[in-house]
Image 1: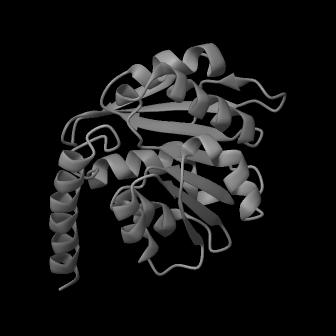
Image 2: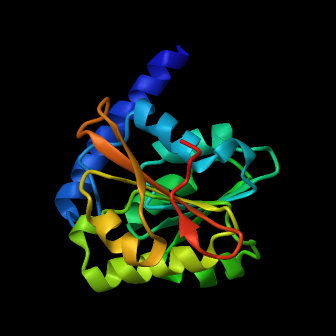
Image 3: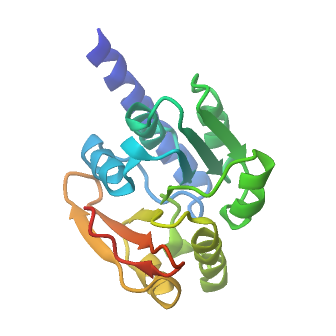
Length: 206
C-alpha cells in the first residue's frame, strides 16, 4: 500500500509539473519532478544529515523537500522559498514542524532568513532554472546565496544546463559537478563549499 501511495504522489507530481511548466516556462526548470536517484545525490552533496539550517530554492512539488526532511536531524530547520504560488501552496500542505514554506524571491534570501530568525544556512539547494533568467537576476541570486552561507556551508544547484556554473565562477570559484543519468532529463549536480575565511572552494564531500 505504501508503494502504491508513493507512486500515486509521483504521478500527480509529474502532471502538476507539466501543467505549471506550460503556464510558467521561465519559472519551472523541468516538465517532471526529480527522480529518487537525483534526490539521493542532492541530499549527499548538501550534507543534509548533519545540517541545522537548510534553504531550498524552488522546491516544486516537494519531492526534494520530502527527501531533505527525511535526511535532516530532528532539530534542523528547512526554509523553502518558492516563487510559483501553486507550488508554494503544495509545499505548505507538508505536515512537518521543521519546514518553513515561504512565497517569495531567492534574491531576498537574507531578509527571509532574518524574518524567521534563522542563522546562516549550512546548505542552500537550488532547483530554480538559471538558464531561463537574465544574467543580472542569476548573479543577484548567487551573490545573495554566497553572502548568507555559513562557514563551510554548501551551495548545491541541480541543473540541466551549465549556466549556473558560468554565473557562479566569478563569485564562488570553480565548481565540482557530477551527472545523474537516472533522471529525465539527465541532470548535473553542481557544488561549492564556503571556506572559514569566507572564500568559496569546490567541495570534496561528494
